Amino acid sequence: MNESRRPILAGNWKMHHTHLDAIQVVQKLSYQLPVEVYDEVDVVVCPTFTALRSVQTTLDADRIPILLGAQDVHWEEEGAFTGEVSPVMLQKLNVSYVIVGHSERRELFGETDEAVNKKVKAVLAHAMTPIMCVGETLDEREAGGTEAKVSRQVREGLAGLKAEDVAGLVIAYEPIWAIGTGKTATSADANETIGQIRTVVRDEFGKATGDAVRIQYGGSVKPGNIAELMGEEEIDGALVGGASLNPDDFARIVRYRA
Image (cartoon, rainbow, N blue to C red):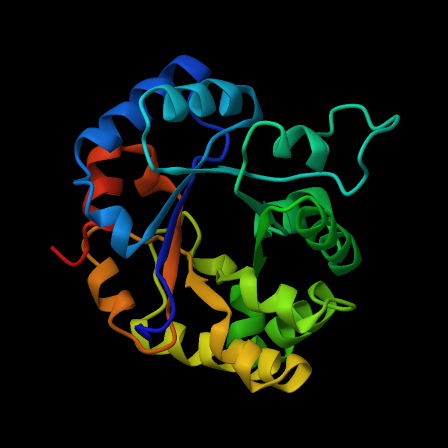
């Protein structure tokens, strides 16, 4: 990775761990991370909505420097949106990062680029940082459509934002075919696509913004491949799924430099 950009390693727990499980996981994770690791990387955990408060109080009470993330958000502050959670609610829980536009939200729940854009703006408006996900399917990749698909998602997801806002957010490149399948894009392939994403940001918002924005890779990230991925120039971190559920594995990922 580029040393001018601070690495960010985020665990997306998806629909796993009750609030009681979550407390144990975050405590076990903290025991395995030396304090100096927080000087080098941002460490984020993204529990389910039902576990956010429990994890927040645990982090605060034990003074653990792990940052709290949420897995999704609605763009409205309040209203008749049964089952949704607003950015105000997350902000009051000291949430720092919010995953927006994850492929599972797009593929399973029909989330559009327009909706992703609204969510990105809402997260920023409430002083939190979006982790905006983009990525292609296997069919799109095999048809040579990766660059077009990902570029469109980046442009439409960031439409109407100011350059300074884009510079401070996080983009996660997650090839859909590599999520939960055990397949991983080679580090070179991931680096190439993330480089294309950075080029789109430079074209839309200027070189300084493109140079500053942090771009993660996500897709079957494990302790065994994190060092190689992080060795690539364009990759600034990882959005980790299954491996983040196990505190031992996620700690090894966070300590990839050790």
